[in-house]
Length: 285
Image 1 (cartoon, rainbow, N blue to C red):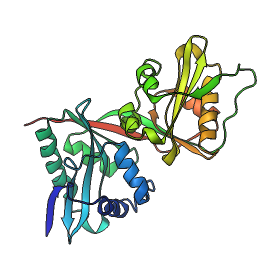
Image 2: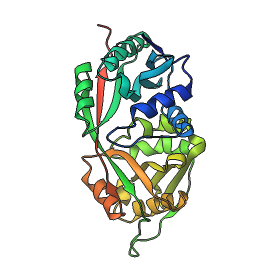
Image 3: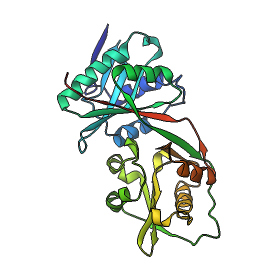
Image 4: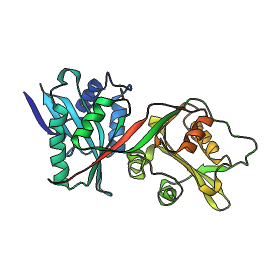
């Protein structure tokens, strides 16, 4: 017998075990350790009352794990999946009905998710449920240290408070970060960030934010008046160094921004699978 319910009484280790089983054969390898999984939940605003599971034999066998952001009244799919032995039973669709009911009760305005571009089956499922493509995003890996050009004037790079970036950062960038890289998510893990700013005579010329436990550059941008002066490269060098000179990742950069992609390639980066950000409105119909 399969029972459905929220995650309020489901221990995080049980969810982790279900996710490990569901993603064992995923198109992109995903096998976070329990500590990494718990960190991801904290970063993305895990909401047990909105998250829903299917329980069989006393264990979760399918799930929709949801994060929420009260500031914008939006919600986000942290992860959804079904263990191999319970697939092709329509559990994802059945659980989603419970998710939607919880979202309507909460009066959430929208639900957003990301799906690998190559994962056609998942995309078709989400479209049937009412999700529609919103933007395409790219993921990169930078395995080696980028090198700055000697012709560029040195940029002074120092630690900078996250609070300063929250107030000044949005006016510098060309596109918004995705959910997990936004300031609301970063504020939840502020103790695990490296925030660096590049100073110029006119103030802040650029900044970068590294999430240390995941070796992820959450945000990096240069003020339009200071671009093509080596500021971005020096910021990326500093973030790479802050990661112990180990490879770093950039997740969910705007795919249409060819200049940014060219910049990352110039800094020894390589592009991985693209993702599609999808969103659906939450309506009480």
